[in-house]
Length: 155
Image (cartoon, rainbow, N blue to C red; front, side, top):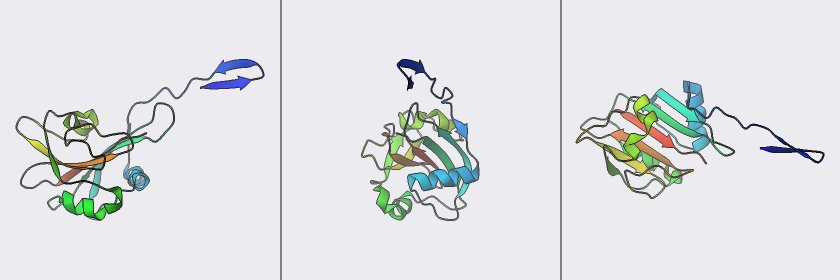
């Protein structure tokens, strides 16, 4: 960032700490509001991180919610119709999407022949990284998934 003072240019260092910041439940609620994603009341915040943008723009958010019943991503997509989530997709473990380090930091384990069930609103492939300004909701595939991970890339 440059600040012009009279005829001299002064270099002002930008925010240097761009590391992920753990979130509390109320901060996660604020993040969900900011990215306009609604969840049913039975979902409980478990873990989350916010990553500030390098210069200007919106922070990225990585959130985990758990519930007592089986996750239904199609119902979540319908509940968030204005966010324009696409069809339910399957991503392979080992895909770029499964390798977000904050996913594993929040407890997402995806190995071997396992897969992830995904809805996303950026039109990219199931296992691709999330596009800037877009979101993906991810659930571990299986007979009875009870966790969702929300990946919201900043701008």
